[in-house]
Length: 262
Image (cartoon, rainbow, N blue to C red; front, side, top):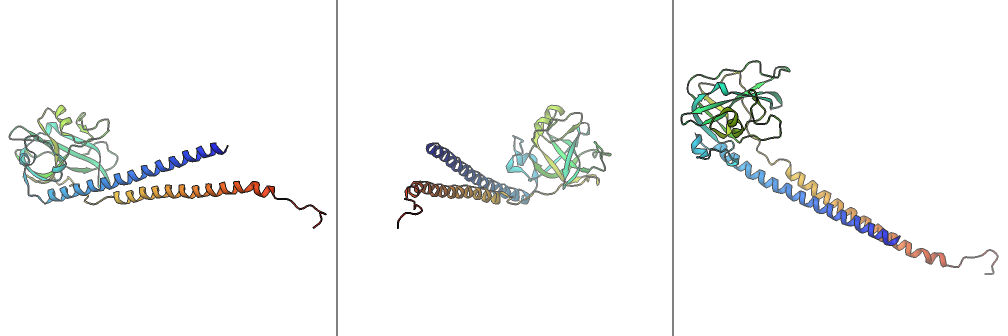
């Protein structure tokens, strides 16, 4: 029985050590994510401060909005193709549910870019916007912020279906709309002619360190807690073993009998 108990105790101790190691790795991972976020914040700050530039100069021939381009201000000139407009459903801006209207802007060189013209707050429980502002006629100049193509696990995802979608994804839209689209999209900051007043704008990026530092501390605390528990129960096991060893000695001591001579 004693050997079995020792095996069980060793297995439990090994499990605790593995748990502590996992907690330490998770804490290190949170610090790694913190470093990534700080680097991304620095890129965002640089892009926000950069002067506006034509989209082809920013993205180059590949035409892909990457992490290094997010929130950079681009200028595009072209004509909206209202026949290929897409309504984004189930969107939220500053905790308000509503819709976003994405319209391709066809440029002079034949390429096109998806332009998120703005947000329309939901009035009640409607499944589609009650009114979609018309696109301006003729040539339009849009100054806006570049954003990466969105990706997610929705059924509809970034592929338009009957003029609606949940995400904005350049390559997925291109397959359905038949346009040579940039991989990414643009949110309107300024437009000539002016954007419709019914559209609400979008908030800027969140530039902070997030909760990663405190999450890391929590994981390290859990690791210390596991090690501390192991040390505590190990000492209890040692003390229990000593008490067991002392038991027979007490039992072998001669007992005094009633009526025996002193």
